Image (cartoon, rainbow, N blue to C red; front, side, top):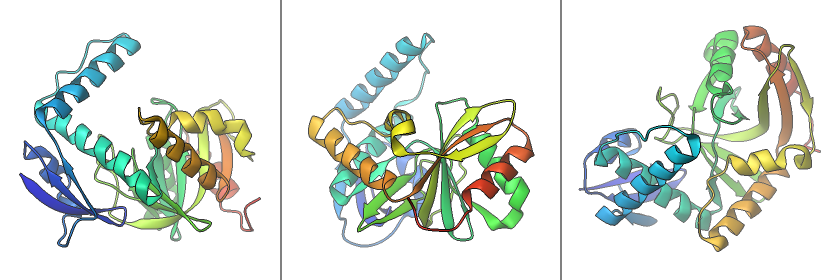
Length: 248
């Protein structure tokens, strides 16, 4: 089964064994000659299932009983993420909302409340706030500019848009009783940002990932937010991050 899709500015051919991935990516379907093509085999699906089993073991839970079509969706995006590094683009785990045409990306370990916080932004700001991607956006870094893209892989609630916006700020979200936000140097939160990137097994591709992450942190504002789950947290973070002026 084949299809062509435009994701993060690149035309991608997908050759799959199952239909699931083509239905998943349907909002990104396009015409044209692919910049690169991803072809999935049964071995790719087997390897993806092994990765899922190892993750379940590390987390001390039973593995999810996912069908092969779903595992293929993951294998496709893993291959796309690896190939995108050749185009100065990397995969990052976070929830991004755009306001007034610029993106604000929230990241944290799973279960902290990224999706809840961007939902509060949408409640606070209404139509001014547009979800870019709620889970796995792609970030392109070039010539001092950083652009964040919506992708089909946008979380369990499928919140996102097929859009691209300049990325203004990245915020590490942490739970706290009192809401507070502060701009920080990259060194303060860098290890936690690394944890939220897609980290390829190939050492050369991992080096490419870290180089792109370094460029990103040098060209956007970085914040650490302590927040509760009240809408007042969205007000604190929005007012703290919307400040104007040059980075650094």
